[in-house]
Image 1 (tube, helix red, strand yellow):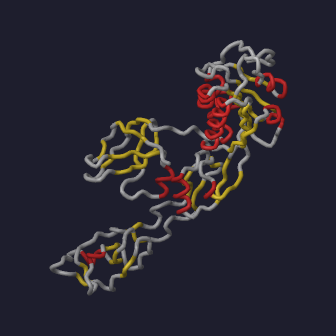
Image 2 (cartoon, one colour; image 1 turned 180 degrees about the horizontal axis):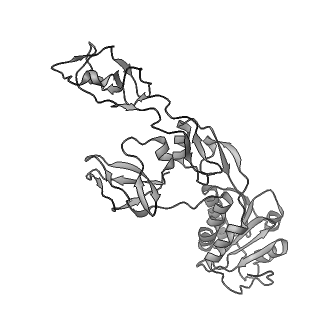
Image 3 (cartoon, one colour; image 1 turned 30 degrees about the vertical axis):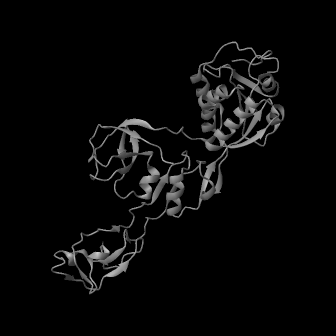
Length: 365
């Protein structure tokens, strides 16, 4: 750690954990704002999202067919059709059920005379009231708005969300093709990770421009004759770390201008990428006030999953006490999808997994 750096010489390499831990007290989250859910994909939620009423409000058909009272079909068969009274009502998937109906018979299970040709169980072909979501929180603050969140929340009637989206000046400190490639890589990474990048080519101007929440500069962190990024930051703001214990990328530097964090990355593609992945993404996550997302990872099941043979099954899961557990199977309610942290695939030739089985958890889009 150094208060002033004259020749950009690194006195020592600060351990990565020390740098990252400092963000908890030094990097402040950006102010939240409201945005239409259709344009908020990839942004970080700044408030819990939920529904005030059960969804659906009343039972609806899950398939095309005839709305019937199941107890009138108990002994029905093609040899002994069972008369239905009142007459069965034709419904399409998503239609509300008539008051007297508690099941939806397939189209071929009712003849032209309105008699049942097969028995159906109560609730068969029906999505009960409140099955998609109970009143309450659906997606917690601090999570990124995934494609699946946009779909489920939109289906539940949510139109506006509160988000945090840091505006980041991304500065190319040189004009070489390598600097340009590294700058493009980092700017695109910021945009895909919940931020909004604004590309510039003048570090001093960007450091003095208070319209953004953060500055990330690429190049000029070493001891070359034209390397001056660290000196520039030291003159306008302050340096907290120059030289971080990562490889490649050990000349990465971090500091502040006022309350705005500034990350200085080395000028090669590999070193800039390493500095961004280990330091930059964590800084951006703190600005967004969210946790880092997980990549596909192995986990142990805390509860068994039963699955039908012959069908590969997608099962949403959540983590609990170091294990993962299923949230739904067969029909996947909107609330289960939004609350899940990922999904597992059960192969078609499997009847499921026992408690304690090792599975691969994949992230949702």
